[in-house]
Length: 242
Image (cartoon, rainbow, N blue to C red; front, side):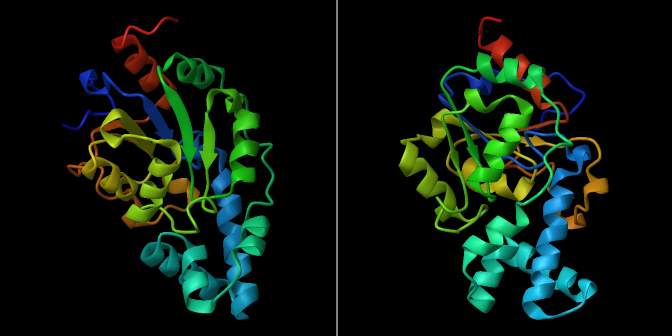
């Protein structure tokens, strides 16, 4: 059942959750910060330099690979045999100053029973930088990045399976929070609770039309535009102390 953004969702499904797994970009921080727009621009610049094409041509290749392979990096590795290290270093060399501390989110995360993880198609260094700026780094057990996944990105099943094995996660006892509906399909199929985070400013951060599809798909259990508030309501429903 889909929990409307403005409605009062039935949160009983979260009883028994022992692992809380969060995507990073445009999920843990507000999309309107345009932080990912910086990464998006640098990916385009990297593609243009690598292929010696115009910015417009690079954009087409970038988004084509992203849609077909899960990340532009994966497409470049498969189609052009690039080494991922330089790519990851270059595209995540951004200014994190647009982010501000998020005390409400930090407090809500702290109330969740069990362990919390970040699972990202980006780099570990970027995840740590974001978490530090938000003031939430201490609330996570670990970061699982694209290198940990052997450069196989979400939504590929292998990425999740590698993550679950590494941390001993039992999917029916876990919850996944994502800003892309397609990245929730595999978790749902394995019994995880799924939450789609749809923050304001979505279209202003260069989202493709297909990225905004499937908000009402069967694999999306809940939808929220306020992650901190949603987590607080979940914690309340579980009787967690404030």
